[in-house]
Image (tube, rainbow, N blue to C red):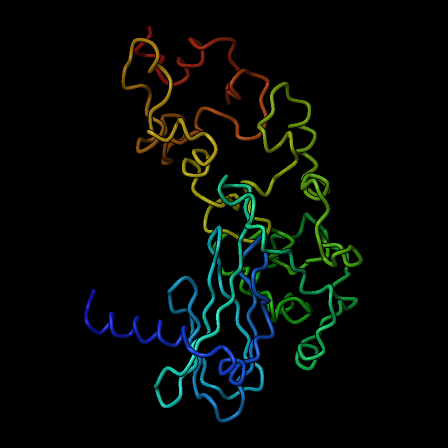
Length: 342
């Protein structure tokens, strides 16, 4: 670590140790409250700085600088992405480039995907932003849905819009605050056209929550998948539980099919024993087992070998969720290794 970085860290620590009352004289953190639970990132932040006390605020999340605010607005707002587990958001105030104080907020991002983060610390609580009136926010933002937000959406035409579609943005009351959730390559259909009320319930308690299980909402549009999967003999755990969002992001993701992670990385979150990258045959004549990644998929040209090369990730009529119409292991292996077995 460089001397400059050590010095800055010490300065940061000194500010953290400063008198809390002085920090309150500088800041008003409108959102988020301290020690709350969120299910999906990003989370919105909003704060004000008392006039004349600071001219810049640096926001860091988990020690990484996210943005610098030059204090020119009455209220400063931004969205920050979170990592699973505990996240510390720091608001560092500067005056003439001198660090004068810091306020922190801890937010726990809960996820079913990783066992360690399914439960949250006992001193954290759930928070629903829209369940309380936010008069200060209402000065700049439309907080109540309009008729445009309630418009019916034809699921067959969802692909014609997009998160950068001007008409979708301009008619959505959600866009100005929640645009950060679309900052990924692959966007879910309703989210792409800002049809938030297709999934979120306007009059639920807490407000704008989504019905559970996930399939109650997802199968309203994914009718073909519902008919196909529910009639299969074997079903993947998340399908049985109706928890689509264990694997898929309901808004947007870096990976195809809105997966939270790449296929292999996603599967080994739960199937930890397969994390060696080798699978099958290890208990018989091959000590090394069968590769599960870093190979070309022999049946899908141009694609990488993954767990989904052999297993259906939703449902199957065959044991072990096999993705092929086969009666036994020998027939299964022949799908790729036919020449070697003849």
